[in-house]
Image (cartoon, rainbow, N blue to C red; front, side, top):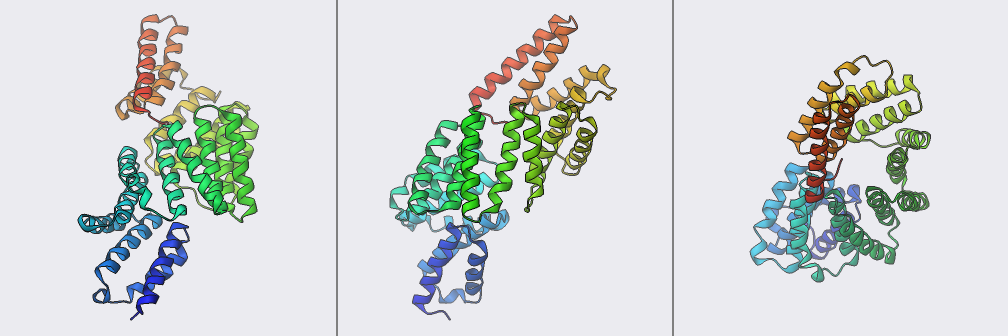
Length: 366
């Protein structure tokens, strides 16, 4: 049985390790509490242990377990102190963010923010601002995202948390990329690289090279895009399937743009195969469009109309308006070039409708 002072010290260390994303050390402490009987815990201990188990599950991205502990946390809310209220809604916000429920995450973060003044740990406050910035970025609320990143960055600087400073610079770069401030985006990505290199944070290099590949691709700097994407692929660390598909897509597109058709086809085959394996219908369609646009050996140009109508209808049904706008514009131009002005107007109208829906909902293409 752990002594009371030892128990409190371990609980504090457990939370600090989780806050600083040192999962291995946090799991080591959790293992010690697994050996303890729950009968030895006070109500206060039980509340804190459930809180820490919820945070551990979230850091592990074990969503079923995180949900279980969040439900347990909620039972204590009626008698909870302000800090406990903050952590419950903060963790629930992260949980929703990891499940791509961005509006729900924003709602929970706003509830947590009501008690932010009760949190004495300024690094924890910085973590709150960073996580809020991340979800505002995903919701395409760029101004709000940048405001929260700067709040987080200032606090991380005070404690010389170089890894989190690098993460902030990377997120700033991504925000500026979304609003087409490419020089600013590149500047922040470069800062993130330097911070990562100075602090033994190799994981940030993979992320930054990946993002620079997309940045240069957006500016039609195909050679630079390919160079950075290949650098990202060559570094240790895993991609999830969606990021890997996106990387293959961009490598294929930029190779085609340089008339490197053979290499473009190789990336196309890898991307298409992985899209089917992952059942990623969006990218199955994106690769089909890529083939019609760039590969000179593609023999289905006569079927362009049917291809695009099927693809546009899919994105309309999925309410992914960025791609509705993009592909409707291409089809409208196709009809205009072929003298079918009525259908050209129909798809120009759809393009405008999609843009209006994007502006209204703040839909982010991803």
